[in-house]
Image (tube, rainbow, N blue to C red; front, side, top):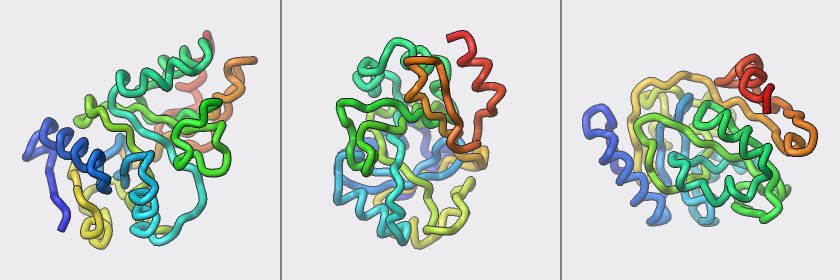
Length: 210
């Protein structure tokens, strides 16, 4: 049976510490991101990642982002980026975006899947901010079903299958905007791969002078 925590009732500190313990122990968690509820585990744990795919009902073969709650936790990764790309990350994060960046060191290969020289990364704020565990994350829905924006809408079979379920209330309801920054270092070009929580206009305003 999964441990259930409500941020509203139990507080963010307990939610953060429980999430860190769950991930460090090889577990799988349901957690509130900024827009939708997600499934998460240690991005280096192949067994936990395979378990997430079983919970969702299918491994679709797509890469997954690695999500952070703390700038300090992602410092080493950010320092491996080029100067211009680091500036773009600073302008956009934390926020409702996934940045696809060059990954020449092939970090987190289980999240990258076949293209290990490109990695999606996120940094979000909110009540779990400060947790030091990076997450392999995907939406908390069965394959082919809508991604939930309310804890009550996370399928009961998913809640029953995880080790920790964190109720963070109602979320924004939008996925992250996915931006490809792999060409940004050279010529300043960026491409939106998926529309979401940050508009193109906001992106242009933040990236235009870099």
